[in-house]
Every structure is written in structure tokens, then in C-alpha cells.
Image (cartoon, rainbow, N blue to C red):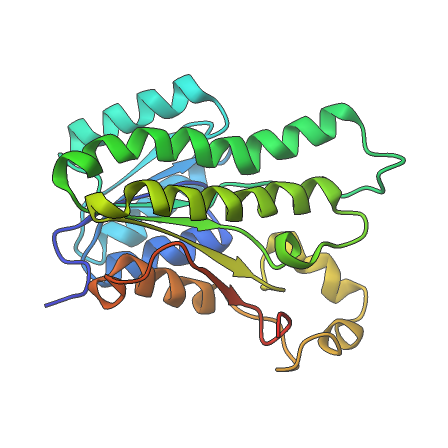
Length: 248
């Protein structure tokens, strides 16, 4: 039997990068997949096809995770279409890097809304069916930057650090209901968001990573699978760094 057989997973921001890798990994292990996207209809439809080719039910929803009403509507539609929500992966996020002197209030608000408020919005909605089922796994994508900070990324770091505090609090609130809440803190992962790092000379970045390489979306997806599956039924309130040793 596959690890996520007969489970329903809702994944935000899954049309590319880490979100897409998690969706495909979960589908390989038998999960039905509901996922959100914000811009590219074409990429969303392509992902639907990839997921269904793995023999699972899949549907993409255009939805802004940072909008509370949209999140409420999304979860109602997913629960109606898929009957239940067993796993929620809060992956949607953006980065608008700038030195604090140049960082505008609008940029700050955009990042906090997309990265942190979105986690509140979705988690608040999915815990209702999870509490009814007395079971569930919530996985929030933080970042190594939320643990260590990084110059020029104060808004991004604040949002990702906030996710860690939120994750630990929700784990305490819902542990008695058998609902687990954990965070993953990726380091430098090869995605569209980090492509510019290689353009600047990969070697200098590798010097900061004990394992001497960037991580892959597969590395993060494997960790998410562990946290979503029965392999981690006694793991909650934790932050797992997928960073090649940067956080030692």
C-alpha cells in the first residue's frame, strides 16, 4: 500500500518549483491532489495532466492564498469536490528583496500577506474538517532565512520566521485532536526564485553549504512526504531544515 493512499492533499502555489515537486511526490504515493495557482493557467493544466497520469484525482484552483475570503471559498470547494482534506501544504510565497532603507511599505505588506497571512488563512480553514476527522497533517514552508536572517531580505525573513512561531503554536493547540503541524526550512534550492544565485557564481554560494551543492525540489518533497505520512505520526511542532548543513 502506498504511503498516502486514499488521502487528500491541498497544496498552495503548486504550479512550479517546490510546490509542484511536492504535488507529484504525494501523487506517486497515492494522494488525491487539490492545488492552487495564481497566474499561469497553462502550467496548472499541465500539472493536472501529470498528476492524473499517476492515477490519482487532481484539480487546480486559481486562488490567492493571501486573501481570507478566497481561502475560505477554496477550502469549501475542495471539501465538496474531494470530501475531505487530510493534508495541507502551505507553500505559496513571494520574495521582494531590498535593503530596509529602500524597502517600501507596499513591498513589506505584499511579502507578509503572501507568505505569512496565507498560512493563517489556509490553516484556519483546513482545521475544521481535520478536527471533525480527528486527524490531519499541516506542513508549512518556512526558510533557512527565517532562522538565520539575511541582509536585503528583512521582509522575507520576518515572514518565514513568523511561520515557525505560528507552526509551533498550532501544534500545541491541535495536538490533542491528533492534528500535526510542522515546518520545513529549505536552504538554497534550485528553483526559479534562486536561479539568480547561480548567475552570480555558484562557487561562492557553495562555500556557505557544507554539502557543497544546492538542494533540489526533490529533497524538499521527500521531507514533505515524511511529514504527511504515517512515518511521522509522533512528530509535531518541529522545523526540519533541508539546507545541506547550513544550519548546523
